[in-house]
Image (cartoon, rainbow, N blue to C red; front, side):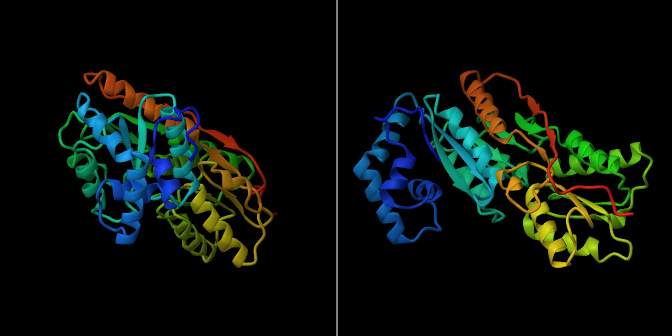
Length: 343
């Protein structure tokens, strides 16, 4: 990630990553003394940090008023454009502040989230941003106290009254499904997102509401539970295509899922959109590069990241500020993967 706009005299974690020849997240793990790093890599990173004076910078910040001037970002992984786009927005917004970014990846290992939160929230960062935590309660229980500043992205927490940023998931799903209905489709399959995520529930509810509004019966056999990953789109697509009366269109709960659906359809020897239509959700950069170019629902991912930073900085400046939810509008993006049903 680029750190344009930052002072050239300030050594950042990106400088350490470049100097040591490893990834951003690996440097984060080493500097915060996590496991899961080879000893040779750890030594290389620490040598680079010492050479650049980065460790001394962290210590000096912490001693000056008890602030590190570092924001922690916890993500499940860096393996998809959805997370990368939001992270880019976070980084861009922080570039105009006095804070640096420290990135932590859980690699979707259950239980590891609490370890990271407990470690980084005890003096290593001034605040945290969480991107799509599957089990937000597990994260938040690990915070040192209920007043520790944090923001959730794309997940709603009703227990801890959290500040959150998301998009109009229900409306986006409603618009996508209504678009397919407008093309003449009545058998519309859906592959949902991860059951623990609020966004998945809202998108499923929007899909169902659109069917109801247009007096189309909701058919449970046309709905497959997914997890927002490409593999679930592929297996879910295969399941829907194997039905005696398969759908003429499939709404995937996100673009990664849609990519798996496209692969399943291609392998079945069917044409898109001539034989079956596919629509996604997110509009990550790769959506316009697949064949055919994917019709999808655009989330303002970079803007979501920027808003999350603004909310967190406001919380740091005013700890008494009440929690709030900011929801940004989605937009239907019509490309080449949808058409009227045959016949």
